[in-house]
Image (cartoon, rainbow, N blue to C red; front, side, top):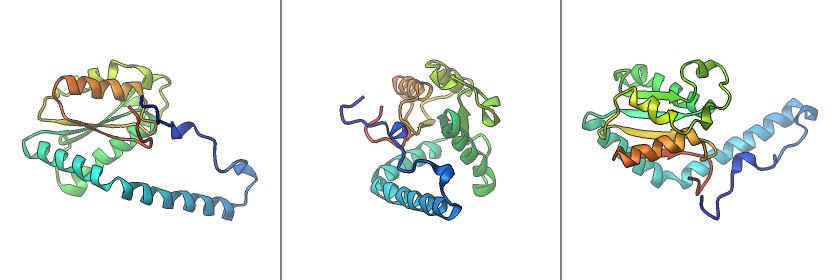
Length: 171
């Protein structure tokens, strides 16, 4: 990890004692935080464009897009993948979401599944992944072993990768 890496997912909360706040106050705080997301995304548009172009290239040559994540991050990848066929009229095999802990983890917490360093690659291999495909890791912290090790293995196999994270300078 880089020296200037700060794990935002483990920082102190800006809002303590939520249970003591009025609903209107909670909603105002949520709205304030939501606005920060758009600003953060705007700052990364050039990187998002680069990744989008690479994904498009891979799909045009017959590749597939894989999302791989754990917990909520994995569920968001599965949700996005499941919406591609009805929204864009593509095959359900074009965009595939993979979550640590397997299908059971979509609805249930599977404790410690995110820490299995080799399982992400094993899960990708079940789909007969090739260098025509592209894998996008989703990890809020940017430190999830299941995701990082899968991306590292993809890189050694010349499979293009990208990532979605909330932490600048994460792995």
